[in-house]
Amino acid sequence: MATANQQHSDVRIGRTERRFVLILAGSMLAAILLVSFFAPSAEDDDLTPSSYNSGSAGVKAAYLLLPQLGYTAERWTDTTQALADVDAPHTTLVLANPVVPPEDVSEVKSAIEEFLNRGGRVLATGVQGAYLIPGGATAEPEQINKGLCLTTPEGQGLMALAGQVSMEDPVRWQDDNVTTRVQQRCGSDAVAVEVHVGLGKAVWWSSPLPMTNRGLKEDASLKLLLASIGAPGQRVLFDESLHAGEASVWDQARGLPIRSLVVQSALVAVLLVLSFGRRNGPVRPLLQAVRSSPLEFAESMGHLYAKAGATKVAVDGANRRLLRYLNERCGLPLDLLRRSPQEIADATHTRLGGDWSAMAEHLSQAMEDRDKSLSSKTALALVKALDSDLESLKKRLEFKQT
Image (tube, rainbow, N blue to C red; front, side, top):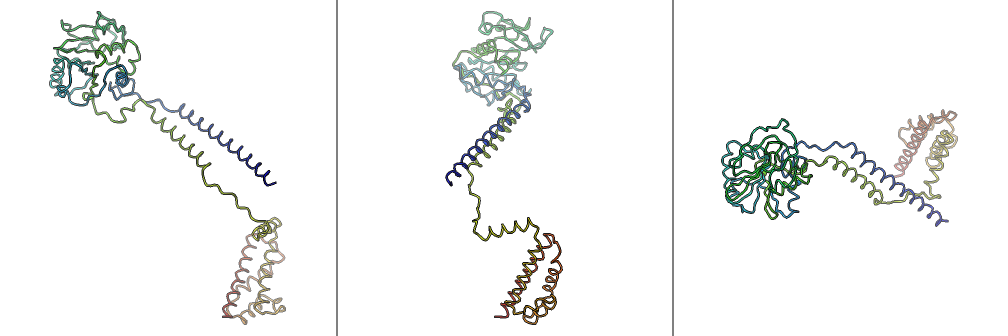
């Protein structure tokens, strides 16, 4: 019989555990879906073409892609003057929309020219990028639309062979001399040119769009970037020293849904803790009172009295216990115990000494309420008072005997 009950209990527990796991899995899936649906879109307000920026305007994708194509990609955070110690013939410096303080322009320009004369390669973009190239200058575009355009290749150079490229046309290359070769145009505006300086070569784009995370998705943009930085094996330095501000750890996380990821991870962690803690906490069986124990008998009788509303029985029982003790242990005769409570208190005083007026009051109240229906609260207070009088009698008797 016990084995059958145990098997039935195990089956019931197994069903409960499976139901709990299903509810937990459903709650986790619902929480992830809700957070994913209502999570705000990631901010993409950083327009700096930096290798730290993972937003649409950054060039982090190019920085990570080039090593897979046989190049060595590094971030250059040192001063431009430190280029003097670089192996120029095997190095390409990328200046994506550089920002140079006016007082440092001549010094930076001189360092870049010396790098080019030694055989280095430079890819520069934007207005300031053009002015860092020896002989470089820009002008207002001749096209009415200065926004995005699809370029027209010019010539048979590698940059021209990249095909039509999506390029912004905010400015155009102004000087068109014998050392400059135009590779891409927006209408009549030169937007991608190649300039020979000493033993090196400088490449200028009107915009860094083809190398950005947004523009690099186009095949022609990637071809233009590879043609501009040189053959595989080159060391490509992404200059971060000429970008406004210093990159921090959080700059590398721009464009990622950090808040959404944190909330989802926290929800999953809470659900896992609840699931693991419930199954691995201390397991203790419920305490079962023995049927023959006094506690079980007292609880059963208490439930019966409470169900029947037998408050008078409880008060009468406490009253009789007190009177029985006065007779059997204190020596008061039975005929005296049938008299008034005050006479009982006086006799107790004569026999044991002390003040028993409180006991007389409690006995009087028990006699008056004998025929009344008492509330549970009133009956409990009176029973406690009579039991307290009984304890006082026991202590007083022990004191007299010693």
